[in-house]
Image (tube, rainbow, N blue to C red):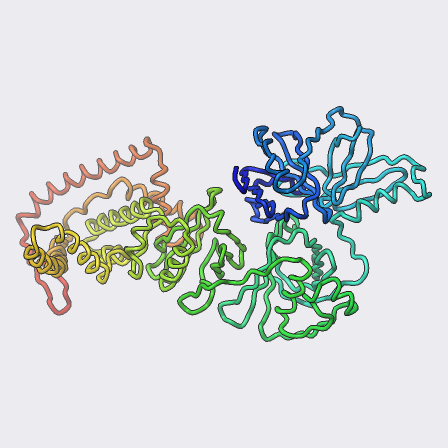
Length: 637
């Protein structure tokens, strides 16, 4: 198998929920990376003290113990993987086979091994409890109740387990119930505000959850105290720390990523976001002696600190949580800032391209790692050609759309995504457009269909009213791919390719001379065609009006209903909504409106026939065209 072994779809239990990941054995270390959170467990080979191979409910599993007292359990192996002689050869640790007890007995021995409580019967484990999952431990007469942290991702949760402890079992006269409880509490993730806080930060501005909070820093957890709500956040739930400069260069975001999140009623907050002004200064004295600070934090903190408020908060959090702080990388936007202004869902915010992912601040906050991204797409803006949308699709088939990004940011963002080797949709099209004024569309069929429908409605209105010349112009400006400065580039590149396939160099020169002549011809032709088109629209005002199509008849009959069902809807939104409703209309309903349109057409033809017989011979139409005002007038004689 070589120097490394790697296994996918290996899962580990986290507070009652299974998390999948990838496990890699190498000569130097064992590394497990969670697919859900990206969190990495790294076990140096010299620290490995014991290993067990055992059958579990689904397949087989490995239990690893380290010299530092940590215990790791990974399940999901197949039986064929048991050829881990690699284990003994590289780690000098025997991979012992251990069977679980399945007798169903409820009387046994409780063993505390590091951070694990094992309940054994005849030296075979029945079940094991990771003490980090324990939220509270209560004692009674000859009884200990262990309560557990709840995980919202788990469909079924274990709430508590009760142990009966026989009396008078302690040889030294100590209470066995209290001894059992102390063993649990020594490794449990229990929030107890024992003693004073290490330090307190007063009235910090918090964006999520929104408000002003006093933040009390304890050795094992963080306490947010506000006017209405209190939150206690164990450091074990902190995944990552981010320090992000605001675009205005006067403020800083400090973001704490949490898993599991904190809850306020039914609302869950996966991120704690603090906002600081760069001008705020603070002098802080830790509530510890200098020797304690040096011993516990090994130079990361000092008893007395002073400086910018955001620097002190981030420094204290980094030392207590023991996590690195992520800052923006080398990305620089068009304005020189390290973020991009955009909108996500209903709110505007800032998108930060990082070295290993993207983070959006702030409502709602989003963090996407590169490894969970399936592809990205640069899409045409839906409201104006001055902006574009940046879409991210994850491997879990979730899509995130960051809209209203200024067009000037396109080149910088495209270069960044390309350098990170992310999969880009329609890569060839985008590289051809890079630096141009157009953008590809994420869903071209849908937008083009909408565009065609609007053009058809415009034609119908033109035929019915004899005016409405603005529709064609608005459609042209909506399509960013038809701008004048793009057309020459496309013609030049096509000309060089097609001419290179010609017979000889002379024909190439002729081809290159002829090609540019087509462009002014095309433009002139379009301008010439528009003038006679205006003349064709001029007709006798007394003539019968052309009939409306089935769609327009249906729209006129349902316009008021659409307005009442969607209060405050704009005119353009009415057309869009109506188009969607027309598509969803049943075939029978459409046939009903098609019959009405056919009847209207027959009435029009009949009226037109009568008009030509009676009025057409009596009147002579005279067309006068004013060159100054560019208008046409019709007179009957």
